[in-house]
Length: 397
Ligand SMILES: NC(=O)c1ccc[n+]([C@@H]2O[C@H](COP(=O)([O-])OP(=O)(O)OC[C@H]3O[C@@H](n4cnc5c(N)ncnc54)[C@H](O)[C@@H]3O)[C@@H](O)[C@H]2O)c1
Image 1 (cartoon, helix red, strand yellow):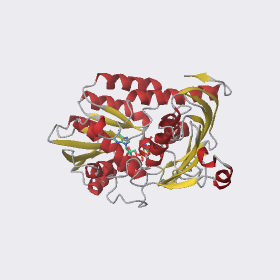
Image 2 (tube, protein in one colour; image 1 turned 45 degrees about the horizontal axis):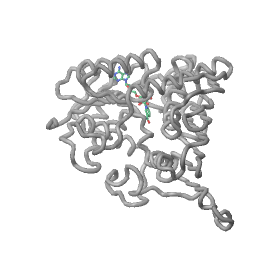
Image 3 (cartoon, protein in one colour; image 1 turned 90 degrees about the horizontal axis):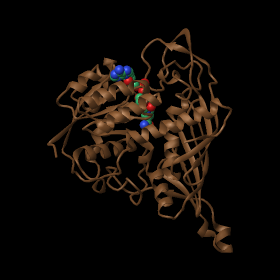
Image 4 (spheres, protein in one colour; image 1 turned 135 degrees about the vertical axis):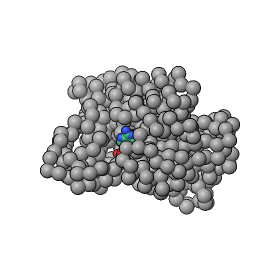
């Protein structure tokens, strides 16, 4: 094992800061087995964003080009956290330079680019992974455990939505999220998460149908300065066309059961609502990202006799050290202390650092998803787009 691992994050925007913070926290979780983690550089073409993030999260420097990070001998591990259309060039450059790469979802904004990235990963001497952060969400991981161990049993029906409202203000500034081909909008942005979670629970999607994409706010004002994440910014009087979807829906047949999924970026009142209910052989479970430290559980067994049936209903399960990730995964890992989405980024970073450091999966957290899984996720979303472009017709994967 190396004496130390040097880390960089490319992109100091909304999610880049979560990666930067996660590498700080990751070595402090669970057992202190990692070698020294050196927080080396934050790379961002916007020098102000890069410099601020480097100082805030304790990185030694900032760079303004990804090439500087690729060439730096003191950097081993790089998170790529920039607009999806930029992933391919940067990831391929980093892999060619011998860096380990953790790329944000979706893998790219085109299937061709995603497949090329998976080929580059397959021949690279280093590790390439994609961060589907919600697999690290303790409540979602626990529901999967309940399914896999037979407590809930196989999925019959999954019903999920990922509603966000970052695009609901028509005066909100144009940004990279609002441009690109059909399916690269809400479907790629939050639909990539929701469909990954659905497959995480119900197994691979075999076919989709009923695809519908809609752009309901068709133009947006150009910003007068840099825009970070979903932030509002001062805008000009000039407008550009929105070229991708604000809303997407489809139904799916999984390895186990069927389901309906809907995503939106114009769902006013829902800043970040990943919500699903999964109905299984032996009961059901509910998850709502707005209350990430709990799930709701219903078990058919509890109503085995008449008096049980009269009392039975969904129960609240408050998550704590008995559930995935929490024991040792929080500084104070006592029951009911609460946790959220930023913690999932730390578990993701720890899994990646453990893999790079050479720990086997048995002595580490579950691995992050592979680039091949990233390609599959994009093929699934492309099938939804194909269905939408053909009046909702069935598309087989
Ligand atoms: N896992 C999650 O929960 C999650 C959440 C949000 C975003 N994301 C993903 O993270 C990625 C970034 O999204 P975001 O919301 O953080 O974007 P963002 O717009 O907030 O930030 C992107 C940053 O990249 C910088 N940048 C642009 N071109 C660059 C280049 N060539 N080299 C270096 N830096 C460059 C910009 O200046 C900006 O600071 C996307 O792939 C997105 O899908 C994931």
